Image (cartoon, rainbow, N blue to C red; front, side):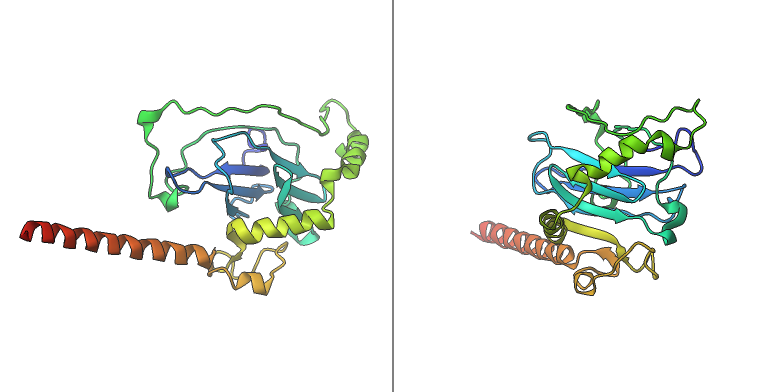
Length: 246
């Protein structure tokens, strides 16, 4: 969701972004929250997906109210942003439209820019179905403030099941984040030596992340894969030498 076409220099934005994929590797998805053009204060989080999103359809949902933002994958909440006064204009507050785009982010998105888009496979396509929009359509002609135009919709949204994280849903959220989150801006000390105001730092969780905000386990897995690849190359050279000698 965005309003960048209307507010070019101070736009709001909420995103689900698929970060490209190397065949046979896990898919990753990123969520973003920008308010009032705050792109220099990115609030990105990244996660590995526990499924192949190309194999079957899944539901990706964003609840956005004047008090909270919740990202869902299917029925599982994966991220909650609670507005506080210190966020100021960084919390999205202006009317937005819904967009679906495919764009080339290969300078950074796939393995940090290691793998680029191969345009021999173009054109690229995606499919969407069962689109549901529940919200308030603002009438620019009416002089009433948005709070008055949207009062009934706001009340029905606040009463909906998806607007409230029950103990079971919160447990599911924490379980997903513990198992699949690979980057958290709140733990990125290189970008933000002082965490952004909505960050509630869990020091036991923070210990799992490096100063770059990337999960340490991911780095260990990469190191193990690199060691295994080196061992395979050594074995291949040894076997080639043996064949040459024989």
